[in-house]
Length: 448
Image (cartoon, rainbow, N blue to C red):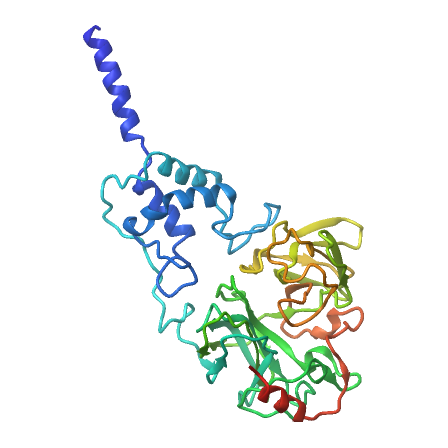
């Protein structure tokens, strides 16, 4: 072969060698998409903060990114941009797959290691202005636990705006959810129950309210934790309101897993320096309380609607179902009849319940109808189904079901949130107020 041909072949081989995908190409992808969860103290079971930690999982990573099971992001691509979008671009998928196929090589050592966020005392958003602690909830080895509650007076002498809030969960594997509610002064919500100690009221007791009591005068959801929760501020010019004299109520639900433990989770509040221009509201009324899923039905649809009586902006959507949940679609139907998909989650995952936060809040004019369609699989083909022979209704336990599209809506700070509702939404277990705590104490005493 002529010398010139040898030179060309050598150059081609050398180009292929230098073009091989190595850890140098992969590390930025891992840093952007993976390390937030894959580091010490976070939800993932293994750390991905160095080549040596990632390399043993190379083949599993290849499979996960091709099947789109990791990073966990279950919404289909659409016209909206999401602030917390964890999905991989096609180029990122190509890079990861090429790296594994080439032998998951380290290549030339990198000067800079993977950057890990530094958290102050475990708080991702920094040290809170106020912390509410669970005073040691004793989770037994087994059994079905009822919702438990903790009432904590905040002793705020004036209306206080909260720019952000954060959960610091202790026993992640046992916590089904924790919701933090504000109970304004004079509210009927859990009125008469003990302050500063954990109790378990019945559904009927939780639903008791005074006739004509307004929705937000009874209670306001500040923030909820479910697996998949991610801490982030709401809006640069927006905050949530805690009226003067309010209590904070933690609603806690645990799923025993065979290992007894004591939970010491915490909830932190970050106060705003001044009154904001915008008020952020957590809305849990886009839901269906009346569905009945027939036994062995593999494709049952539940529908929920809510019409806005005043304009608002949509900040986030979080689909919530239990283990029979299969998919959820939330659309907006505008007054002119135009429809727009807000979120489409074709493969719902109970173990990773994402709150999808819009990069830019979406304007919803007065008269907009929000529609949610939740699909359930109650068939034997659903490997998570606890009892395909059961007719399934709304209920607290994971073996029951729920259909809620949690929303965060934005209005002017001086606006009245009650005016959002065209009609008063149906509430869970609502009955006339006849307060007594004896049933709750008895239920707590019987807890496994």
